[in-house]
Length: 404
Image (cartoon, rainbow, N blue to C red; front, side):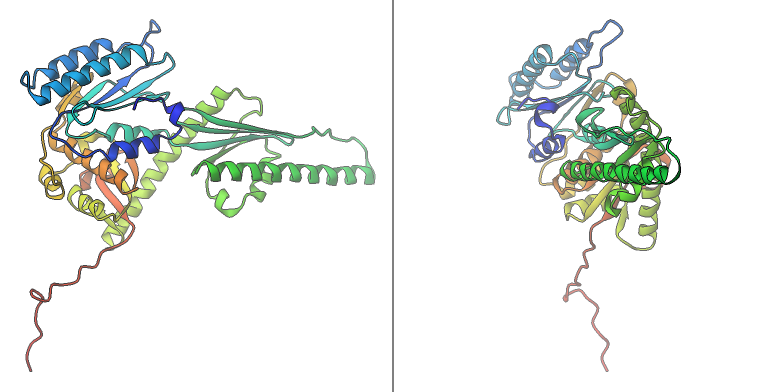
């Protein structure tokens, strides 16, 4: 099923379908393309794609089921990128395996993908797409003054939704004495009514779009009033307050808020990893390392999975994946425009792929930690758990009480 992100409106659902794909004995091609326009205004990925897919095809013997499936996938992928990629698209992700019931998924993104990469494995390779989702979360920005409010929902580097509230503009009175005092009370009541209406709208949008982060922006007169009206649960979602004019262009609001979200993520990553380490050292609801985390994912214990944002930092053994899988673990083929990406250990790719896929299958949140040093001593992997499993000792092997 080929589609655009705008058409689906839910990248989460797309990821769930990909994670549900059962591993096969045929090549599954995962393609990630940076579709940003070059200095000439063109999307320049055709040459990389033709060269890479041509070289990878030669790794399969002619007239075999694997080669026939691969060749049909190449034809379909080539046709798709030639005919259907839109000029405004900045990133493309495609997944194909013709031999598995003509499996084909494609999505176009306004968020950029860093560079061109092709993976060939026995299931879709989801690590880069999961990282993209973590880099560009859905969040709300409320820009407000005393009579007007603009509410934006951003995600994947673009505007997903906008709403506006406009009330009658008030003018300051120059009257003195009791007239001035009465007017000031009237003005304060008017601002309070405006703030309540804005907060009600914000609460509705946050609930219906399942937003976890909110940024406030506006003049210094309305922000304190807004804060007083925020219910506790909504107030806890505020990550920053920016100084933006009510008429600031949309692209400026997006740019400023993305910078704020990046700073917030860096800070919260460090706080979350500290909590993870403290829980683990205290014997709490946490585990670290690929082996224990894979086992916890297989039992649905993981609430939040932490991974190094650099796949190179993921340390693990393919045998850990093989133990938990009914399918043979095969070597992935990796080809990227960045030569350094081609030198990542196969075990790192296999383990990273399995961690992300199992997290998607069990609805575990995936957080990528940009600072590699935070998870370095744990092989780039850790998890906060939903629950522990107390294993009942086998009565045939448990120590017996002493006689007498």
